Amino acid sequence: MANGAKVSITGRLTKDPQKGTTKTGATQVTFSVAVNTTKKVDDKYISNFYNVTIWGQLAEYIFPKIGKGQLVQVYGDLLLDNYTSDGKERQSLNVKGTDVIPLSKKEESSNDPF
Image (cartoon, rainbow, N blue to C red; front, side):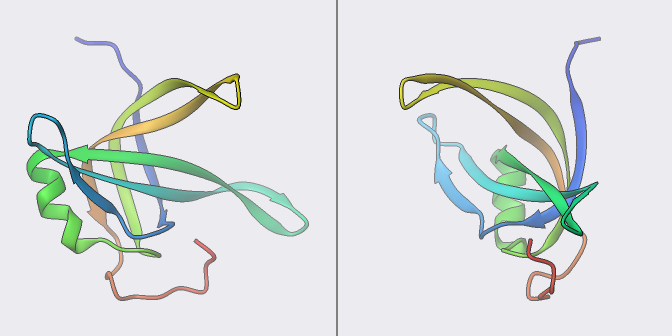
């Protein structure tokens, strides 16, 4: 069995997904999901943001079905990426999505900020 950090996150898309093509011609879709935590500051929940990338047939299938503000559940692998910004070494947590399940309709709006 392969080692890895499997995750399941449930939250709202912060903006419409972006669709592109990799160098090999595969479809790639990226989006960000805001997930409320149980911690509150000034009576408001703190949110964590996850960048999600999906590829191939799943990306083709899900792209027209999801949009900003929509509640989704994402399953995938948690990845730690290292990068440099303003000359400083930084890290970010990203999700390589293996499944995306819309939990609300695309056109549904919410009073939730995310």
